[in-house]
Image (cartoon, rainbow, N blue to C red; front, side):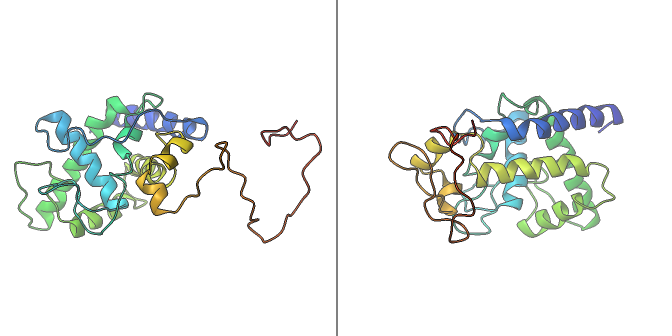
Length: 220
């Protein structure tokens, strides 16, 4: 990746990171292009394999190459990481093919130095075993890696997809059985769709409610 391209990616990722705290992501979990050939399909497979390395899950179907199948239960892919990365609320989607190409270039270099023969029918990173994917990704987060910021933001988005169902409304995600929230046993809302958490985290109320607090729980 050239220095100009790297700067463009970093600018988009910086904008992505700055927008995360205020976003609600539309969309639904998708497995489109999971087995598609060509650039678009390979981009999806590469991003899925990266996310599965961070939060692994079980394979969705026989011959699922992107997911290594290292564990049982749902992982980041089942939780909708591709929907999160492609959210129209973020500037990231147009850059995913370039990021995937960078990751695959790193995989080729890793394979060469470890004498690993990669298949030609799948992206290079997807062709690595889970053990080798993990070793490669661990190195990407090293302080000396020039693209460390890219992998950090991608890992943040991967975590948000699984831990918070970032691409869905929380009520919708819980009621439709989002695999990440279900795995974490995220509580169901009350009958009116609101969460009140009657059991205090510390076992007691730490403060009284301000008299001017609105019905929704917001400060006046």
